[in-house]
Image (tube, rainbow, N blue to C red; front, side):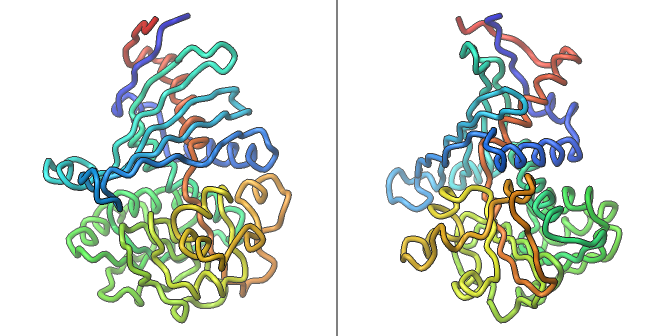
Length: 331
């Protein structure tokens, strides 16, 4: 009753597939649309990502949620760290997920959150495309060939036949590694491009970089394109957002206070009235995603703790069935 399961990243990886993650995210988005997924906006701690003190070039977020379809609650503590962590050769993402029984408050599990974070970020894009892209095949423009570039591609390939990927990364070796890793996942061609504009081609343009520059230009984006600016900052110029036919987000309050929409919201150039729908409203059938094949859509699935709590809950069930991990009595 009082034991808490302890699960490592390898435990999680042994019971989880990307197909599982997409299905869990989809059901949790439906919960958002129906009001049974309860998820406050993230609370952030700046550890030198933007602040001058402390000087650790990182940040952490606290992300609590309740997921109705699983009757589970919890919190993810997650962030990204450069500085000393990068010098040690450790991954950028660092994360831990804690689950509770919402009826009595006992902690049911504590587990690594990095793998779940990376996979669910890709899955969110795939689920959004399920409701926005009406063809079985898809062409992708990708900015950022690191872990997020990999998981975005893995997730989209679960739902669509990828005809082509044009990938740009400021570090060419990363793009080369991406091409090698994704050859068996992408049915079509993978082309490494040498200029950012050359990647702005396709049905979906996905940016998962750490750039603070507004490098994606409005003039590059053709009619009918869905743009996913998913980095921590505004990776595209103002006009691309302001001229979009529709803006769709995963969490309105959160997306207006961080990520690609923050600066425009701070300047009162964009607000709640400019958000066409949430992905949850699309998933629950409350709103329609696309009315015209020529609409240019900006979609921002910035990431919520609800996805992490839902996936972690399913992982816990699978891990218990296989007697994986350890246990600890905190009380």
